[in-house]
Amino acid sequence: MRKVIIIGLIFVALLLIGTFGYMFLENTGFWMGMYLTIITVFTVGYGDIVPVHPEGRVFTVFLVITSVSFVMYTFSKITETMIEGELRGLYKRRKMNKEIARLRDHYIVCGFGRIGKEICKILQEHHRPFLVIEKDETELKIIEELHYIWIKGDASDDDVLLGAGIVRAKGLVSVVASDADNLYITLTARELNPELFIMARSSGGSGVQTKLKRAGATKVISPYSIGARRMAHLIVRPTVTDFIDHTMRAGELDLIMEELRVTATSHLNGKNLIESEIRKKYDVIVVAIKRQDGTMLFNPKPDSVIKADDILIVLGASEHIIGLGKEM
Image (cartoon, rainbow, N blue to C red; front, top):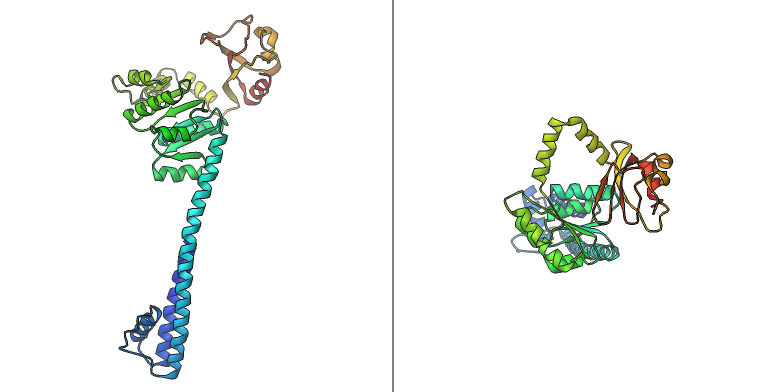
């Protein structure tokens, strides 16, 4: 934009210099001087009017040389801008491809609408690796400004998903606008990676959830249903709902709820809750324990044994949970 303004200002200055030059040297009027300048600058030379005075002819030679230089400069800048744009685009794409190639156990977010934006924001807050697949140019500009990793294309296309590293991915979230598109994306993703965690958006229409499940979705979420339930809970039990909201939002309160996976090498493996001293050492409450087989122990007893691959759902201050996480 800056180059265009500079070229425009030079052109206007050239026209004004030529016009006033002919007015002074050839005693022409303003419009006649402008006419002479234009046919000289663009080297038209109709021959209907020519400079009479020697000074005017010398000035015309100067104006022609200057005009040719200006035209050459303009074309060079246009060519430079085009080449720079192409090279910049190639460099960005190459850099992006390298970043994608480095991704492991990442999440693929298909669609960058209102729901997709919120998902990406939360993934970034929790330092989860992810990339976005989007085909809308307007949304892609926003994604670039946010410095997210992205791929332009149709998320139901095999090549696009393979380019997004679906075989190395931990999960895929399909939140495009239509149920049909989410269905196609789920089918394609499940075929390419049978072990992938897939979460798909549903409009809540009749039979949509069942079809998405059959297509291979691990979880099917209806934003309308969740929104309606939350609104109802705010009426029925507002304090409980506010408490849960606060514990699930990073940054609003020091108190958060988090899940931690127990590794086989953790010193907590094989100990019960009393022996682990989680509450005493870290001031963290174990709200529930999810076993490897999916069994959920709510409000576990003090003698409940912690095992490898258990997921502890804990509540406490963020720094205390981070400290406990280092022991896992």
